[in-house]
Length: 448
Figure (cartoon, one colour):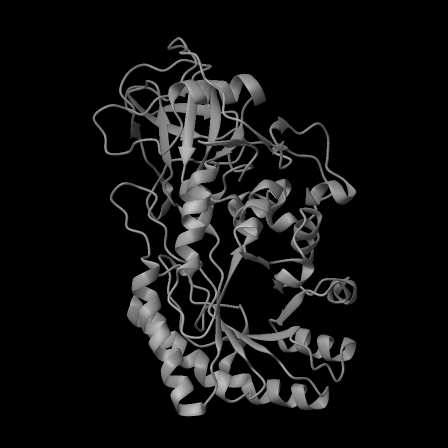
């Protein structure tokens, strides 16, 4: 979700360049953005002046991130309680920008890729292939080439496991993992629960005998078991899923590490709480210690935070390009120069973002797509209900709106969700780096 990282103490630009901070002169009220007065929802790091500088320097829409916040969240993840070793993988679908990948790489984080395209993108950003793990719903057509690079691969289906066996028969490296659905998950909505009978992710735990048969058939030695809980923060659920996952590890004797995924709940609004990693991690640590005492096997732990690292570290700066009204009994709408092409999360999950504007009364904020679902301010968990935001004053075309708490993995496929190719048809294009897209991205450029 980054085209530029406007940070103290540094300004990180879209292609990974870093420049020193600049002083910003005060600006006039027209075309500016500040937090609304008398509300608990305050901007996290942008000021009126810095928001204007973003527009003056790069135009809008622009993604802006705080480097200091990225580092702080990374340090929190690296402190996750573990008994015998910890690897933190950044789920790069949450923000595949090269500058963010490079920042986390320098801090010691590894990478979780959700497609072959994301692997290529991470490598292009300078991440060593040995630090990249691929867990994908779709088997990449170039899987053999990706494996030759030296990435880790988690087979997420029986078909994927069989394909790995065909390519790597007799493999005894640490390259192979197996992703299971342990039968239980957690999430704020059904769409954010990636474990249990309503989830397609991973191999259903009752199919373990089929996994064991394929492992024997192709003479493989899986080094990891991978599971995923979802967007939940209940320590009891984490403890139970850890136990179920460790049971799977016990039945595959070559496994040396357990990856519990990510999906930690992030509180974006002032009244929302975030997952406390120290709290959910303690029972997980205890489960690993109990497993070691019972089996004599000390397993490493892997986790894969994504949105947890980036959601509250950045924002989307947009311009009000039009205002519409539906009369005294209707609504007044802000029409932004961005929308579901840059910020799909409100439409996809009916998840409210933190929208702030310099002025305004009560407004419904919408995007620039001719789609009824291009709504920036839905009611929480109700995608078909319009929610007004009280912003306190009158608004004008040309004013700035800053939306915080978005997740770039929720951009539409047209703007490279999971770094996949755009569909072969015309449409609205979002920004590349800090500039508006000029035409369609082709070839390797889509990984940068």
